[in-house]
Length: 226
Image (cartoon, rainbow, N blue to C red; front, side):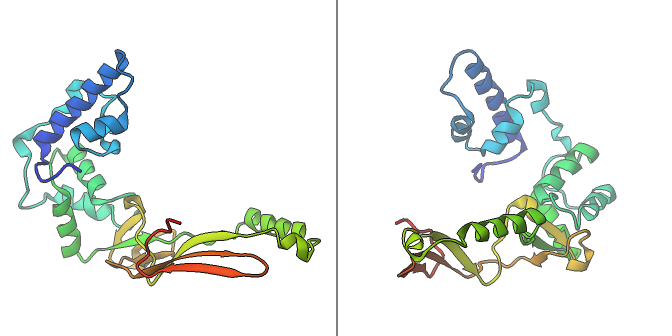
């Protein structure tokens, strides 16, 4: 949302605006909310949430080391490598960590390039099947509840659902992304798959009764709008 003008100096200005708008809201401008501020400064609501409750002094940074770095320091490189194989370590988060710990300001693209040179690839989380004891118990209860239904009872049901079929499961949120050289380097969870750009999928909306089944297929995965 920030556009091509975005840089650390502009971010400082927008941080100050977040705080100023919050103060105006506290003084009675009740129409001001996170979404309103985000639209005014062309930032995300996450940016607004992060900065609106802070003090003005926290908005300023040392720009003597800002700008695109030609070479990462050894300490910064170690931070990037230590973040490998861990969830919640996107390039944006790692850049903030480097700024806080090393007082070095790097852009996300620099970290992406470094990870690529080191042979790291992005993986995303694949949720585990819902097969806990609670899920199994709930499904057994539902089956037991339906066992005495008659054919006439089922005629009054018309279940429906919308779902997508992906050749490779779509990427999840940034915090679900894990950078590693291979799946074997990711600890504690084997359910990860390498990310693929522009995955092919279809969207399916289905509704059925005891007598009929109807469906609509969107070959490019668009949402069903009725």
